[in-house]
Image (cartoon, rainbow, N blue to C red; front, side, top):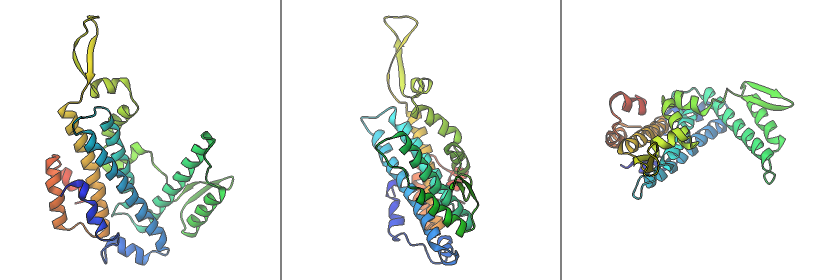
Length: 271
């Protein structure tokens, strides 16, 4: 099974959880099932985003190989995977899942509002959307903070992406490296996106370089991207009751290729 074909494990179920799975129990017991369904959909959309970036990463590392774009693509995979897990963690209580869902929805409205204020051609979210989300949070008994009738916090604190990559993937160090490349930091670009080919013919104190990426770097990118994606995928499968022994063995074959074994593999499959 190719990792990029893993979506078939979810799509084949028509996005319906196995009876008596964590996801099924939450839908049947939570006082407002649509709030749980919203959280499930948020997590899945993020997993799809990670999958899309994975597809692009594979293409970028296939001849002719790109040397800079793969770092940003891997960063995006970590971001989407971490956030998908933050919402879809199978070990969360239903209440905490909904709290995180509310925080993510509020963050989305806030980002849309900030963007609209800096882009004259874009409309921001109407105030009514903030009020509607606030009313929902209050109905669910979630923690709220309000300023000038607009919520500033719903459910729980929304963490930074660096913190998410640390808490959900235990990979904040790699995320910082990837961010340096995504932000085109010279020190990172020179070491990871280019290769020195020798002293400059025009200046003995300078070196000539050309775009290049080492096999070690390619392995690094594939391992961190694959690790994040597998953990996010397995979170979804376990939450919905599809992470069977047979499925784990299918995933293990690909994880072995990426050198994701032992404790690292058990971490990825939530074991």
